[in-house]
Image (cartoon, rainbow, N blue to C red; front, top):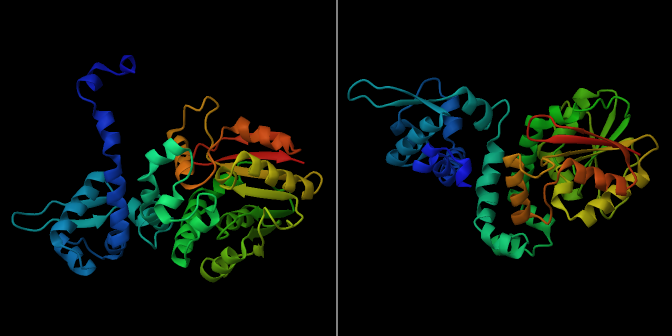
Amino acid sequence: MAENLSQSELDYPFKLLEYIHAYRVSKAIFTACELGIFDLLAGSASALSAQQVAGALDISADGAERLLDALVGIEIVQVETPARDEPALYSATDVASVYLAKGGAKSLHNMALYQSQTNYPLWDNLADAVREGKNQNEKTFGIPPEEIFRAIYRSEKEMLKFMGLMDCVWSLDGHDAVTAFDLTGFGDMVDLGGCTGALARELTKAYPSSSVVVFDMPVVVEMATKNFLRENDTFTFSSGDFFQDELPVADLYVLTRILHDWTEEKCLRLLKKIHDVCRPGGGVLIVEATLLENRRGPLHTQLYSLNMLVQTEGREHSPSEYTRMLRKSGFTDEQVCRTGKTYDAILARR
């Protein structure tokens, strides 16, 4: 390892220290989201002092100032240099207003809350997950490791938090996922495990002549229609368990962040089931964060795979691993598209 490091990094390990302390950056952002700091700054007509932020949010002035200064260092809050004896004044950057305030155009607020309140406690047990080779839902939440669905949706609050996360993901990455290939020829599309319908919304925008159905568990459909459906949405919902129940007949089945949750045996069972019901000439679109073929990156996908270890029974795969599963399930003509963003796409035909 030492041969790959520059002498300056050996003399003082700046990059290593950055990684060791990286959790503090994440937690500072998460905490600001939880406290409502980005909402307050983005909604204010003028810059605010730490004292004003503290008063508005009912937090300590000292704590507010320290957190705000850290956010300035992270470059997601900006500060006006005060005159002598005047307080510093803080305001939201464009990035904070767009991505971290609740009302931002591409808000990741719910993603931050889920990472902080659900994934962060699971990662506290990462060492046990590595030792045991199984998820840590039982140790973290008191739920047996095989009951993944109950772990994710263990309360209405947790369900809404997870669904908010999914809504964030596809509001941000959905367009690139559904336009990685030209899907115009597929008339009827079914988004299996489509949760809030955020990905289906992108499908209907990109392919307005296609019919799109979101197929998910009854409790998910109920919560989605109550909390996430928009007035101009043109897709529909259908209830069922894609492992246990009959699937709607369609031309294209979309699996976004689904296969990485499950063992290969379950992935093959689901893909075979899709193949058997898919119309001739139809296909399946898989959207996942994929590893390089040598498994040496991207780093975010390697870390996602560790997250699958602590939270589910699945893992992240390389494109060739997905195409192998597709072939074993009867699909052919596999195509892979790396989008250059978080999620890649694989299209195969029946």
